Image 1: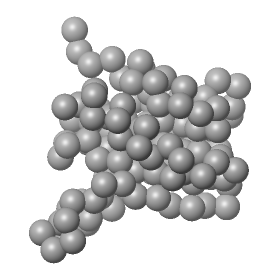
Image 2: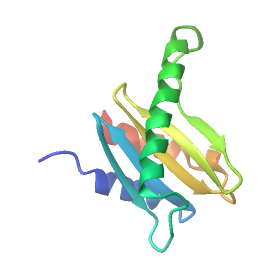
Image 3: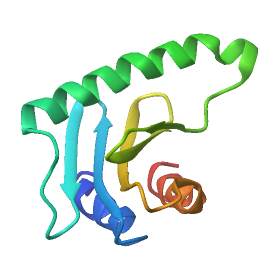
Image 4: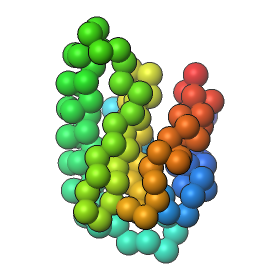
Amino acid sequence: MGFNYDEFCEKILRINEKIRYVGVYHKGEFHSKMQKGLKSLLSEAEIKNSAVEAVKRWETRLSMASKLGKAVYSLTKYEKVNRMTFPINEDGLILVSVETRLDPNSIVEKIIEIRDRAFS
C-alpha cells in the first residue's frame, strides 16, 4: 500500500478553514484536494500547469542553496489568494492556497510539522 495523499491533504486542510487548496507533487505524481464547499479559481489544466511552473521555480531556488541555504518555503501573494510552496525532501513540493484574510505565517509551522511527520 502506498502513501495516502488524500489523507495528507486533508490533514493540512483541517489546520484552518481558510486554507482553500492543497496540492502535492511527489515522485512524478500530482494529488490535490479543495476545501469542501469551495470552487477552484483555476481549471484542472491550469492547476496542473501551475504545479509544473512551481517545480521549475523551485529548481531555481535549489541552484542557490549552496550560497543561501536550503529554501524552507516560498510565499506568493496574489490579489485573490496567497500561495505557499514547501519542499518535500528533494523529490517533491506541497502547494497550499489560502484566503487573503488568513495570515499565511500563522500556519507555516503546522504545515511543516505535518510534512515532516509524513515524509521523514
